[in-house]
Image (tube, rainbow, N blue to C red; front, top):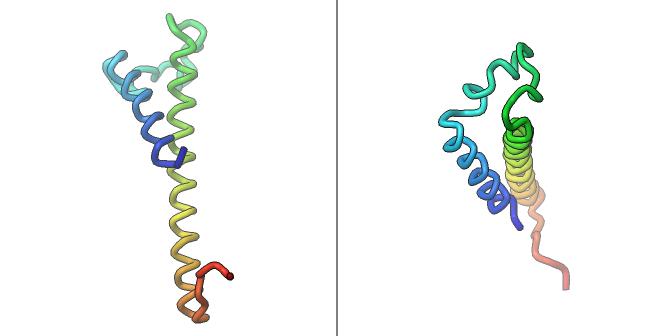
Length: 90
């Protein structure tokens, strides 16, 4: 599974929570995020944890994709500068 496929699956799950709770994570759980309320006092504490983890996973995938794109650009520039060919050796 490539990064884009993983991101799409995570986005689907995030949209499910958004629809279920009729709002975004930060609007739905402000008291838990501020520390005024414990997540275990929620009706579904697992939803808080899973939704938070999904958002973190999506952010990590975004960062990884940026790094990979920048790495690819760097390799292209390096190949141009040194005149190297990135074709596989026979």
